[in-house]
Amino acid sequence: MAIGFIGTGRMGSMLVRALLGADHPLDEEVWACNRSPEKLDDLSLHHQKLVTGESMELARKCRTLFLCVRPGDTAAALNEIQAELTAAHLLVVITNVVELDRLAARVPCRVAKVIPSFAQFVRRGVSLMIPGPRCTAEDLAYLHGLLERVSRTYQVSEAQSRAATNVASCGPAFLARFCEEWAAAAHRMQPDIPMEDWEWLVWETVRAAAELPRAGIAGREILEEVSTPGGMTYEGLAAMDAVLPAMWEEVMRRTAEREREMKAAIRL
Image (cartoon, rainbow, N blue to C red; front, top):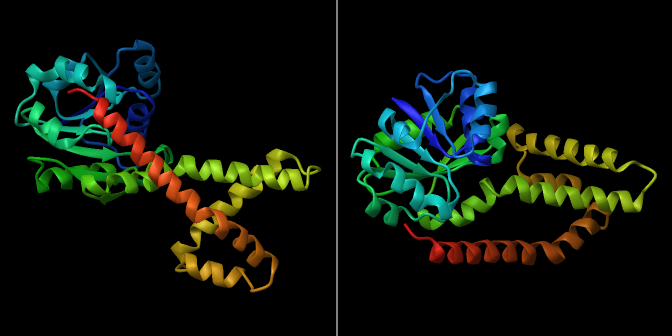
């Protein structure tokens, strides 16, 4: 059963590259289409096994279709393939903005949602799986097997997806912003160490700390082991405690509000 990717922007191309470069090769053919031929040319140059075509051809050849277009382009993309969609297809969207009930009412096939993470570029991170109407246990098992080649998977409901997306999908960007400011603050305090060295120190520390839970040392235990009451780490954590809870509440509020606005504006 071939897999088709309609749209090869940032996330679509990342998924194609990750799957075609996975340690365990796919048995299925991978097809892709894009309105910008140069984006397909670049993908084809690096992955000779990739098959390209028009969206209607992908719908004819592929029983699993990933719709990787911008939310506002969803209706147009569906119009192009509508005549080829059947009950045998599994249509997967990769954005929270497209609601699965509305999508299922628009197409005859089974639908699901996968929220990818940029971390899949290095075959890590978590892919969120969200079943939609008519989606079967076999569909979920298939998606799980596919995505576990390039990430871990975690199933959530659509109602849970915004908060989960803020961690699994938005997380790399949030973490990068946090680390960027951390390195900048250290550079302001000690400018005779180059900024690129501070960035290296921060990310090496993050990489090492991320391995500690894998060794059975949980986050709370890290805090207890590193922070001594009255010490420097303790004071630094106190400063963070004064601002971080409100900051993360605001992050959650603003992303949820923006999602609601985009859902209200989209037409299928």
